[in-house]
Each structure stands twice: as structure tokens, then as C-alpha cells.
Amino acid sequence: MPRMLDVSDEVRAEIGAEEAERLLGGDSAPGLYDCTSCRTPGHTEKERTSTVLFVGDETAVLAFAHAACIPSQVVPVSEEQLQGAVRSITGGGEGEVPLQAELGVTSGLVLVGGDVHPALVVEPLQAIARPGTTGPVDVFLDLLTEQGFAPVTDLDQAPPSLPGWSVLVAVGKLHAVLQPPVGGAAPQAWWQAHQAMQVADEWRAAVNKTRQVLVYCAPVGTIGAQPREDLMREALDRAAAGGRLVGAAMPLAGT
Image (tube, rainbow, N blue to C red; front, side, top):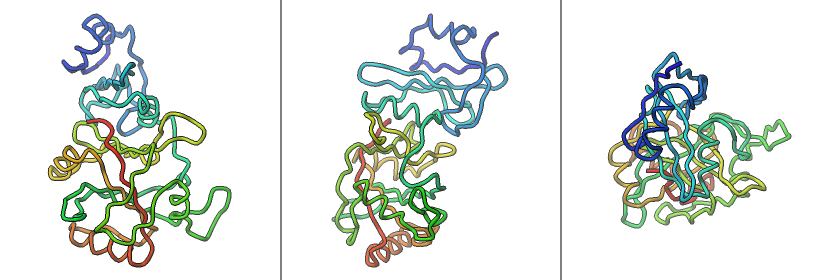
């Protein structure tokens, strides 16, 4: 049965006209799929579906998404990131740190050493207990420090880079923070957006310039939902002064 697929010109150019027609005809496209963006089920025979092609240095993987969530596109990723990025977006893997907890993520710009940097502020919606325990001690920062995040005491100095971690941005929207899996070679999602997160034009311009994102993490209740970037900066400064902030610089994955 024909599929309700959107195949963009750039995807068609990568996979070839013959394969594109096979997809549209239903020969090589699934009926059911998990949306690469919101991770909820979709059906190619009942709703418009986007084809999303993840392209590494040597291989490429085709995935599917609700057309209402994300347009058909080609997403360049490194070969090392390809398997983990696709697995994370299609819901095949979850991060090990912290526990399966809901994380609040806010994008914003921070001034570091006189330069503007794109940043993400991560704060759990509840206290985080160590795996295998029920708490009540909040060990969110301890778990991250064990993964290589560095304590942040002064926001005027950028946190060090964290090998193996990256921020996945596609077509100007934030999708995930990727981490290296325990005992494996491919990154997987530490945090995954329920639906691709829209970011400000200024943030997108900054990340396209720097090709990296500064990721700051604080325990629940430390930063809060700040309506302006100056207020977010004040909250980050207070967290840093109180020893309640860790951070890492992560390269950009995607476009």
C-alpha cells in the first residue's frame, strides 16, 4: 500500500530516485514507526510522515518522523555518533546517568570571558537518587561529576570539554544531549526532547558560530524557570558560588 511519506529533494538526492519511489510505494517503508522527534508511534499509511536520513562518514541510516514534528531532511553526524544518535532519537536507548528522571532543559546565551556562548541549563524536576537506592539524598551532581562534568565556581571561565558527549541539533532545533554508553563505542541519549525544541535565532546563530554548547547542570530547585537570560545568569552565579553547579563544553552534532 502507498505510504504518506514526505521525501525532501536532499533526501532523494542521497538515496536515489529508485529507492525514493520504493519508499513511496510501500515496498521499503514500515507501516508503524516511532517518531524520531517526539518518540510516539506513527503510521505511514494514516498520517503524513517525514523521511529523515542520518549520514555519517561511511554509512547512512533512514528514520521516520511525524511530518508535524520535523520536516524531511538529511542530518550529518560523525560516524562515531551515527548509531547512538539514531538509537536515541528512535527510542532505542536511555542514558545511565542519572536514573530515568525528567530533566528540565533551558537554552540561553551566557557571557564567558567577554564572548557570547550558547548554553543549556539542565535541572531535574525531582531529587535524584543513586541507582539501586531510593534516596532521599540528591546525588545528581555526584553522578555527573563521576561522568566527567567539572564543578563550576566562576561562570567567567568556560567549563572543560567532555569527551564522547555532544549536543544534537537538527534544522535549528534541539533534539538531544548524547553521552557515551557504559562499555560501548557509540553515544546514546542522556536527555531526549519529547518534541524537537525550538531555540531562539540568537542561540542558533551562536551555536553555528562556536560549534559547541556549554552545558550547566544544577540540582532540583536551584535555577528554576527564569523568564530572562539576565535572571538565568544571576541564578547560575548563585549556584556556582554555592557549589551547586557543574558543567561541560560539548561539540555540536547535526546541523
